[in-house]
Image (cartoon, rainbow, N blue to C red):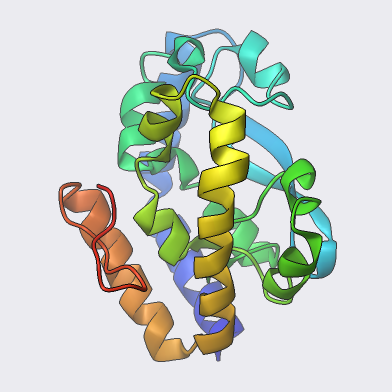
Length: 210
C-alpha cells in the first residue's frame, strides 16, 4: 500500500505542479549562472546510493564543491535560493525520486555517504526502509541551517549533537511506522511549512525547536 500511495501521489502532484516547477526552474537559471537542478549522491535503502534531485539554491562554484561540509554557510546561497530553502520548495524535484523508487514520501531523510559511516549499526537499521521527503527528524530540525549557522564548528555540532538525535527519531520511526502515522507526518509537514512557528511533538513530550 505504501509504495502504491507514493507512486500515485508523486505522479499526481508532479502533473499538477508542472507549471510551478517550470516557473521555479526558469527563475533559478535566470537569476544566477548554471542549470536549474542540483544532484548529489545520497544513501538509500539497503545502502544503495542514488542521486537526489533539488532545485539549485547555491552558486555553481559552491554547488560543485558541496561534498565538503558547508551547512550553515549562507554566503553560497543565491537570491532565489533563500525563499526556496525557507519554504522547502527546493525539494519539490524529489517527487521524481519518489516516483522512480529511490525514495518514499515519508521516511528517514537520506544522508550523504560520509554520515552513514558514523554510527553505522544504527544506520543499518534506519536504511532498512526507503528514505523519504519528510520524517519526524526533518520536521523537528526544520531550522537546522540556522542552528549550524550560529555554531563556531558546524560540522562538530552536526556530528555530535544533531545527527545522534536525528537517528533517535529515525529509529523510532522505523520501529513504529504505519500508514496512518505516515499520513499524520505529511499533515505535520504541511503545517510546519505553512506555519513555521508551530512545533512538532518530541519523543519526550516537548516541542521542536522551531
